[in-house]
Image (cartoon, rainbow, N blue to C red):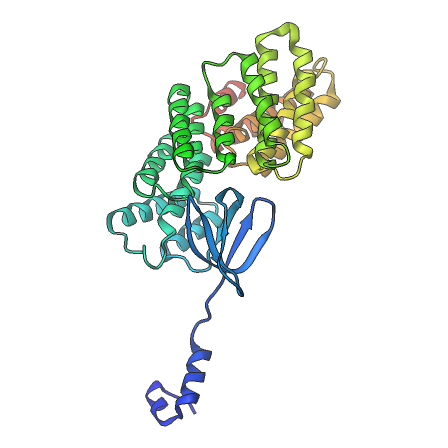
Length: 378
């Protein structure tokens, strides 16, 4: 017999209550992933702001987790539009996902319709939009969404990361002065809100990397200080600073040819250390592997040094395959993998090089590396 809701009036009250408890959807828990790699499962995120992420475990009182310790949060209940964006990402359609996240953010700024049920969702959509725009090298979108986030959700835990992404986008776009100004805004926020030392150090790292007024020696000195201060306290910042120091040393080698070999040797040591240090994020891993490949490629005695060229090729290919969304490294790595194949000189190698140049043009249009790849096409 099928029991209709109308029939429940004939059942004892206790039985009705029990049935409703069984039929009601269970509250689905959230999962917090920490920077140290821990997974806090079966929790309910109650609030998140610059002051921290407040969550309630399955048992016990609410806990506040500092935002610098939070890597990401998996929310079990999301607005339908954000589910749609997540599906687009899973399908590899990041352009559609970016458009959906921006659409959702714009709607919430206008109406705040989801503020009560999903108070975290608008700022989260902004953060994801920024990440996707960065991976697509849409620097203007990175800046535009950051400005919307800061103006409308200034207390969001995502604001510091958004400032950093905007500064990075401006630097990659070639506007180091604007990047520096953005980092100064972040520095003011860190100080005025009394944010953790982590954010002050992260801001300094950004300033050391993009500062146009620093000499190469001053840049390296500041980066060395940041590495020392980050140490084991902030593993991700430490690894990022190692990669930045390696890149700065390679730049010195380009600027001062007489010191080229010395700089390559020192840079390689830093990249190797960065690659071997646990706790690195995707960008630092891509940077360390690209840096190692550069050292091998530049350090090859000649085009006949096939061992070094093959090892560089393999590292470049790993970056291109494992980190295709790392806009600073993936296009360069794919291009130089092609150059390595060209230098190896076999007919099959040259054909592979041409295919890789075609992939650079297809996957990363509008980048300097796409233009370089066109120049190598035959």
